[in-house]
Length: 257
Image (cartoon, rainbow, N blue to C red; front, side):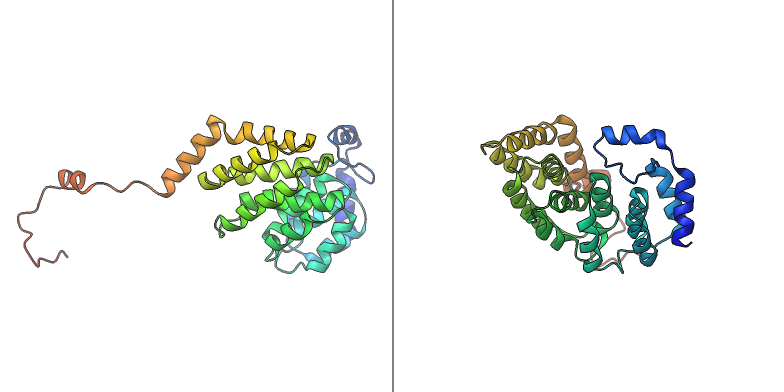
């Protein structure tokens, strides 16, 4: 499918009546068509992974075309230079979060970008660093706790940033890390407690909101259940013996077939 064909399909799906609702949620609706995310995902599946097409779609400047670019760019071929160009164009939290979650979190340099972007000054770039941390806390299945414990230091460092789209992403990253496992839950709660003592309105909000969720009965029960399923308690030898009577035919050196 060509860029022109995709754009034509998007324009056919345009729903201007949705724009007011998008704006109420803080989405930038300049150059937006009002298309639902499920409709865009459906179209993206037809396109498949195509980084060249994604670049063309991004260049149109159409809000939904840029969302589509994040859906169809191939994490295996996208470059850091391309992401840097896109990063400078971020002007809405939904595009920022979608690109981080659906694309960047699956690239080999995702963890490095968390550290790099969290230090940047631009509001949406800094948000991208923490949105990426939040995404990795859910998507990553290969790393242990160490990189996420490092992220908690970044979260504490930036918790005083009162810009709306930054503080919400900092809070999101803290909550997602704390829901990954019991060890990270305890570490995230400790980080939130430390953040609560910082003399900044944003820090107090981030801490209170995170502590409410991370200490909740629902989260604690879910993490304990997950831990139990991953590390079931071994059956005692006594219980095993009681469950399996000895075989009188079994003698020393007997080999079972």
